[in-house]
Image (cartoon, rainbow, N blue to C red):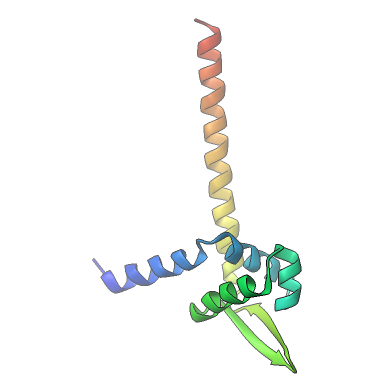
Length: 112
């Protein structure tokens, strides 16, 4: 088993495993955003946004550039959006499966 590779993958997904970080990445789909813009978009205070961006930056998920006193962020690799899209499809498939099971249970309950 390739432990270092699995650890790297686990850390990568752990970094993605925070609602604010996922929201930030989703908003970066539309292009570069400043910390202030992201604050408004995800309805969080500046320190929260900055902390989450720092974690995303340290994991090489986002890049930053500074213009004057404003820092702008972009996704380092646009493939991150495809990854999130695939995750959304998986969640949707799971929900559809759960919905189908519930409907089946309701039919069984109605027949007893």
